[in-house]
Length: 113
Image (cartoon, rainbow, N blue to C red; front, top):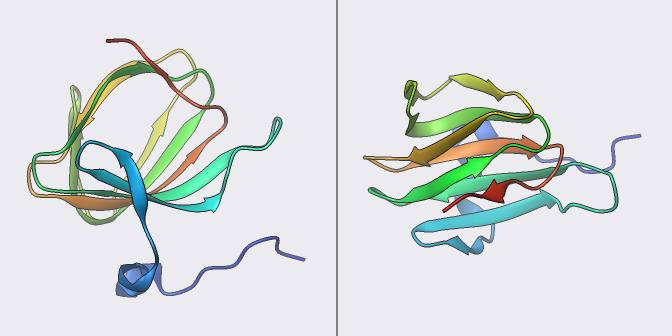
């Protein structure tokens, strides 16, 4: 049986979910918080111009852009993009126009700056 169920992400139903501060200009809605070795799963909402500093992926990270666009040093990812960041990879992230992403981290990232 599913541990957690959320519906309607593709239809904008995420807008009614409670978000809490995460980083400057970025809020988070935890679907599943990190617990022991279990991965974390969340929605991140970036305000226009928000960014996350350069960081190291200790574990696998997967992202689905639900709305808007998210960028890093390798490109700009618009609604519907699916991004996989391998363990050991580094980048910074920003959103010029704001975005909402569904994200799963195997392990928390390490901020490098």
